[in-house]
Structures are given as structure tokens and as C-alpha cells.
Length: 254
Image 1 (cartoon, rainbow, N blue to C red):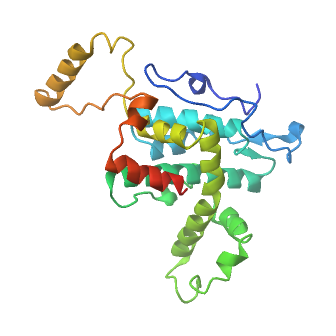
Image 2 (image 1 turned 135 degrees about the vertical axis):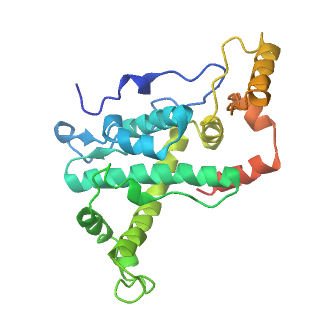
Image 3 (image 1 turned 180 degrees about the horizontal axis):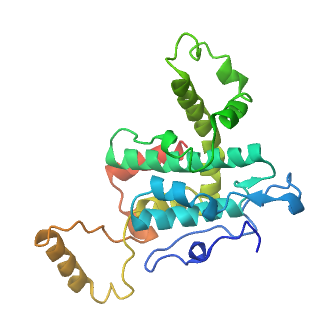
């Protein structure tokens, strides 16, 4: 089995009731041709399973993250041919997580809460490898604000600053690939909006009142948190609100 093959859960179809607009495979960026096919490896879902489960909360978020990373694998962003390139692919995964955490922070209008340090051991990202990677960024190393001898307290803080730089450098190609996979800015917006919500039952339209009553009872009488149902592409984009406009502007600037 090709080590870049996605496990079975990455092949699930889109949840019932949710339209997902995808570009055709012909329009998607093809895997990198810089790595010879016989030597091609990738950071597949099984390789980032532990880090993904730490970073994403709840079954719905994790399901979305599995699908999204499987798409990035297919588009070649997880390819590597040696250990340093594997670490670069791991940084792109961290950029993927950081982007989603920033989306959540924008959604909830709160501060970003994401600690790179918790993910580094699960991704086998050592200080030595991160030092090699940041060494390729002279603009960062020559920045007067980054002086490990005067401006930073310890090696851990230096490493954190370097990791932030690497993550944000890796983010643009990750977001561009996600937009391509979901068929553009609107498709990615819909996917992110639905990412933490429960799929609608197949017969929801016929039994809407029954389902809504049951959910209201669970919330009101059982004091249970019940995630909202996913919405369709048209429902999300045609119902314009101030919050959606703010989120759309933020995403459009990525």
C-alpha cells in the first residue's frame, strides 16, 4: 500500500444536507514534481493522528480536519524525500492547525489560543531540525527584534519565536490549497462554518419540527450542549450578517 494513501475515514462523502463545491481534479494543483516518484513519501493522516486529536476538539472538528488534511496530502503539501523535508511538511500541518485556530478566534471574537509546543513531540519536530529550518530565513535571523542574547529570555522563547515565523511563512500555500480544494473562497467559508456542527439527518426536512423539539428539550430540560446542525451552501452565504461579513473579510485577506 502506498504510504501516501489516505485511510478509509478520509474517503467519506460530504455529510447529508451540505453542499460542497469542489474544483475538478483537473483544476487542482498536481503533486509536486520536484520529488522523484519512487522516492516520494508524505506526512499521511496516520502520521499526524496524535497531533490532530490534540489540536482539534470533538468528533465533528476532527472529521473535518481529517478530510481537509487528506486533501492537502493529495495536493502535494505533505510530500517529502528526507527528514528535513518531513519537518517542513510537519510545519505546514502546524500552519493548517494555526489557521483553523485563528478562524475559531475570529468566530468567537477572542484571543488566539494555540500552543505549538504541545504538538512538536507528536510531530517529531526537534529543536535541531527547527534550527535548520529557521536558518533558511535570513530575514528573520537578521531582524534586530530577534536577538537571542539580549531580547529573549531563554532558548525556549527563541524557539517559540522561530516556530511562529515558520508557521506564518507556511500558511499562505496551505490556505491557497484549501481554497482550491473547496472550490474557492465561498466553498472554504462554508466548510469552515460547518466544521464544528452536526450533520443534518437525511429526513430533516420532513421531520424538522420533531427534531427541533427534541433538541430544544435536551438543551432546556437535560442541560445538554447540542451542536447546531450544518447548513447548506446557499443558507450560509445568502443569510448575510455582520459576523459573516467580518469573517469573510478576514478569510479573504489570508
